[in-house]
Structure formats: C-alpha cells, structure tokens
Amino acid sequence: MKTYQFSEIGPRTENQDSLGTKKLNDILIACVADGVGGANNGKFVSQLSVDKFIESSLAFDDNLNLIIESIHSTVLNF
Image 1 (cartoon, rainbow, N blue to C red):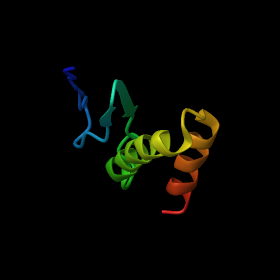
Image 2: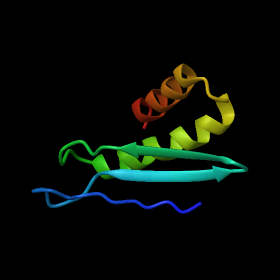
Image 3: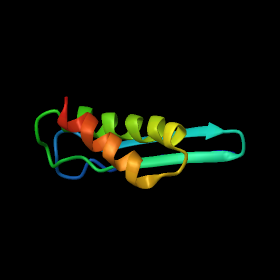
Image 4: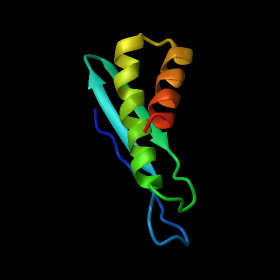
C-alpha cells in the first residue's frame, strides 16, 4: 500500500501541520493534525498529537474516547 502526504503552508512562515501513518498487518492508521496558526510550539504540538494518536490507537484498540483523552492529557502536561 502506498500513502502520499501533502500540506500547504499558506501565508504563514512555518508549516505547523503534521501527518503520520502506521501500517500494522492489514490496517493503516493515519492521522492529520492542523497547525495552530503560528502559535509558539505549534509544529511540535501538532506532531506530538499525531505521534500520541498513533501510539494510543495501538494501545487502546479503537476506543476513540480513550485515544482523545490520552492526546489531550499529553498536550496539557507538556
């Protein structure tokens, strides 16, 4: 399976969008996090969210509420 990624920087000086994929057997986990409009550490936080989503998807076996809570907690505790 091939995956392609594209993100447009728009009028900003930094592209804070993050994308991530993980193939696990016959399952593809994909996540996109929009940047935060040029805010400090926006790129880091969007990438952290993508990484945590993929990690949590594997750990919480499709329980979206737990996945979102895990991401939220990680970002708030950063």
